[in-house]
Length: 489
Image (cartoon, rainbow, N blue to C red; front, side):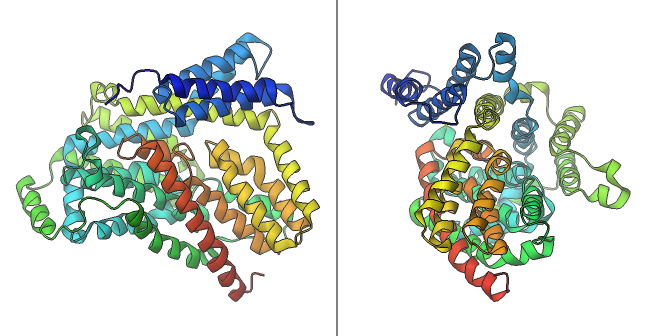
């Protein structure tokens, strides 16, 4: 096996050549500034290096930060350029991701993770597919009250998934991911985009979509919580029902049937005995974070008791440190958390400046004009519009950034092409969450689960692309019929 710390010369050359071609060979399109185009060259070259595993992903990220600062694509002032290059580290979402990974260490250290895993196995452990469905349904149940999809999929469900995998001796550290962990990690992640699409309160950008739709239609289309939930119910449930099975067919786990798993799990639980003090603290911390993430205190006592999602994560981690459930050495030893903070910060920074420099708005306008000129009829035109909007997410490390940059423009273009306003709103709203399926940097949940090492980048991207087709097909066909029945168009 090759040393992952070494430089892959071939991949490095390919990434550099791609970047240089965009920078020097392809002419800067009219309406795009040279700085925006040059940043695109750096971004695409960085993604190519990551895909080709030219270097460890954290090292590639540091090089990208350096190049942004040195080339001055964001500012002519060297000090400002350096500040821009490091701006990703001030993004609260990135720290939510890192802290979520650190908190999950407490589940391993206290043994609570194993206890939860064994209880899941005792209930659903007859078949691996059943465990997959139990994870998906568990996330679906808490989605309406968890506005942070990263907190839900990465900080709540993922530690449980890892504990279940560990109970079957499936670990990336000893090369046994394919036993069961590989499959469960993919289900863990692919559930997240679906549940995020099903409720206004399931992910932070959804209320922004409601606002953008209202503004674009002069408040003629006003989407309520119940209206969204009802519209997403049929396509969302169908996606949830199909997803674990599709992934099972693509990457079948080595352990498929576990007839003795329930007995094994019950024996292990008996061995562990009653819940220990440190486990009780972990349970209290998790319940407290869920209540705060769900904004329950603010609903009861007022807005002064409303907390930012990342603040809640810091509060949880601080509690674990004060109570000595975790030590500072535990935090320093969580290498995947620090690695994720570095590489995700670089990608978020580059993606956000592509928007700030105007490249994304230019792209949206260009696509809208091009589709309109084809005169294909609104149905086919909207299908092309949705596909472009969806797969443009390969260039984003945040759904919020993507929606902010492109949703209003694409919604306006769709209306101009003749699409029914409510139909178009729910199609774009669904795509705005389902596009998370694609990459290991698509949303905050992705680097948490990808960073645990159960799934290779190739498997992650392959699964993401397949699930994107499955989910979009369901949302388009079943969704359209369901919305027609509801009288939404």
